Length: 263
Image (cartoon, rainbow, N blue to C red; front, side, top):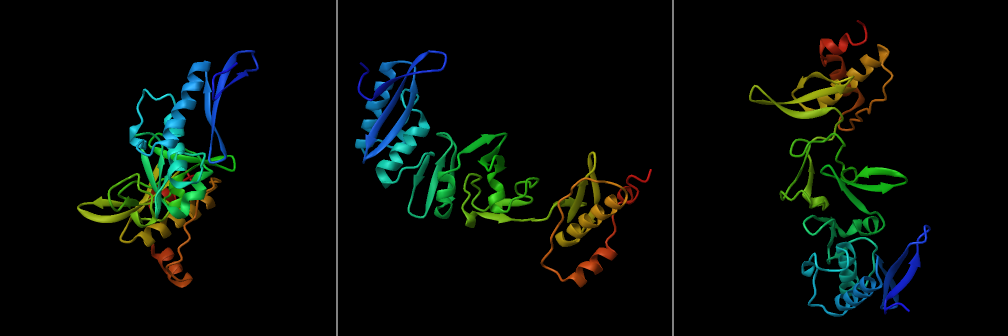
């Protein structure tokens, strides 16, 4: 006979373990799996304390707690906001927090709530990912930040908080493929690069649009010379086709690009 809140289960190899769960506001909540009956029961008792004592906050969590931190956040959000999510979200009136760890707390607009309620965020190499349709996607892509983008060159967080993903806090400084802002002889210019078995500098330009056109022109050149790589193309809606053609014809690119694959 298992202790309250604890249920014996068996793995495929025959190993016995214990699952813990609790019912709150007519919601059956799984608390996780534990190696012993006593630990599963302790998780049940602790969950009851969290759900019934509003003096217990997210910051009350410590390493001594039986529950994992993610479940701790989920329970407190359900208690305070009357809505259950399977991800570690805590809802505020106009935004919400997503707790990756006690030290890493992401902030999002309330409009993103149901996306992150159904998409778990993982953290790897300084980047945040979600699994969507079988693919690992960086969350940056939801906010117009390109995969190659460099913080404070191509985009920035206005308030300086790199964990604050509210739309008003994200400023895109450069939205073009292969383009970055660069200091050249104390003068800020836009550098266009293309990756061809290594990075090739196409050139330096006065504006981001000129650099984006140069990148497109470089793609056309290397494709004509036999390169079959699938490059992303810059769609430049800010200028007319006539202006685009004029910039394209006048824009110079590196001799290395002109001669690529012609050796």
